[in-house]
Image (cartoon, rainbow, N blue to C red):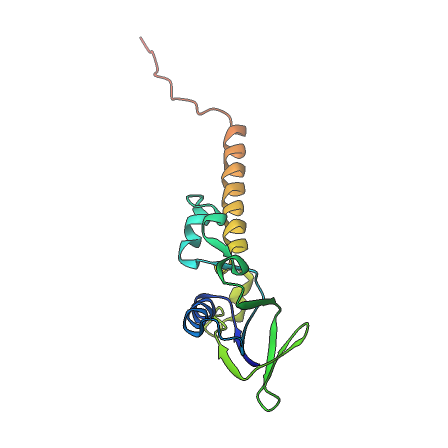
Length: 163
């Protein structure tokens, strides 16, 4: 049996697996394995909507296992290396032998040579990032509202009545 291993469950990996499933049909001598560190595909262009509360996180994510046919085996694992000589993908939990390899790892945040920015910025790449940012904004508004309620009421200037 020939093994096709796809590294990454984002747009590229999910699309590759779907096209392979469609094109390969019922051929039994091929196995497709998708190795990804997340069990869900998240439609990242809508993450700002989750952050603002306009869209719920379940509306923009789908289980990879539910989306793909049983033809593709989804393995939740972090890819750590690829050994081209041994023709294996090395995950944190196991090794995945391949005859054909598709690398679709996605993107990482580019700090443009300023690693110190990581201390001040939250990337918006995952559903957990969007929910965390939304909670931080909500907490900031609640704090501002509490502080506004503790101030003494504004005194209007009084007109002098001199006669």
